Image (cartoon, rainbow, N blue to C red; front, side, top):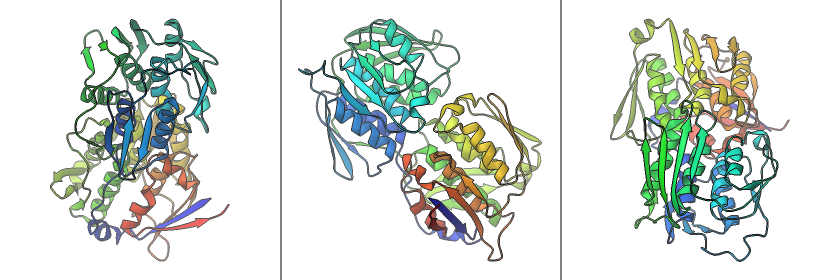
Length: 454
């Protein structure tokens, strides 16, 4: 399946500003709230009206592990796991789909429950690394077959104690252990070695666990968490509401910045559920936009964007470290490539292990658009400039590549005879992994979607 997207960028600002809308809810928070609720002492309600493929994968696996989750369309009602399970030695299959978060967070949780589980997955997930998490779990007496790759079978019971993980491989390994050790009776210490990357996601995990009464302390000097584990977390008395997702809002912020540049006037992005004081690290998209002259101000009605030509003029080269916010790279690159500025994105090695080799995939996307890009182990470098119009690009079955490609619609460089920008994206519905309403929201700008069979 291919999607032909077309847009008259001169009309988009007025259309977008006329229609307030809600960004899809934070996938990172949704995974964590659902898991914490399943580990709690009584039922919880999580208000949510978004159903991405990844979040539904977590719901599916939690049900497999024994939680009762009722989808009420506008909320989830979660009844926790039972304390005793007469069939805990009977192997069960947990289908994680293509969700790395589901697998990496729930592998340790299954061990805390003492379950025998065969984890499966699709797409690139079976190829994505699970070591050193699996190594450390085996060091603590848990049994795992096929340490890298899926299916992977786990058996054994998590025990409290001293644990250690390198923090520059995946923050999800750390988050999974924090969940598991919080419901493993006794004191545990989790020491993080090496430089911590994607630190905001670990902070977010701790925030959710503390909202559910977990006793976690962190020593910054030794990079050590101390966890006073117990049998159950404590469910909050009131329903929880998931805030908007800054990872996906990055697309809209970048698009608004490009539209403000085009119309040489302030542009209001009328979103109603983004938290400016969020713990989500991908709010850093606003800092990235400022490197290219886009200034941002939050208001009661949304976020206002203004383009400052003088602020951009002083830039000779922009260097952006994405080691803490790797999910921003695709959209940030396609935004930056529309300015005649040299850009280097660094700290991106882990992007090679996502739904695609995201570093190479973004470079290929730029090449198709007429922008020369170079990559090495952890860096993407390019000189921005005019982009070709009407090209066909691959999504590499990667939701973030779909959104990055769609950002080219807001370029003012080249149009067809109808003053339109066009792009054809292969496998466009990969975007459902995180943002199933993406094309519906994109239509608020006047963009048209035409589906074509291969």
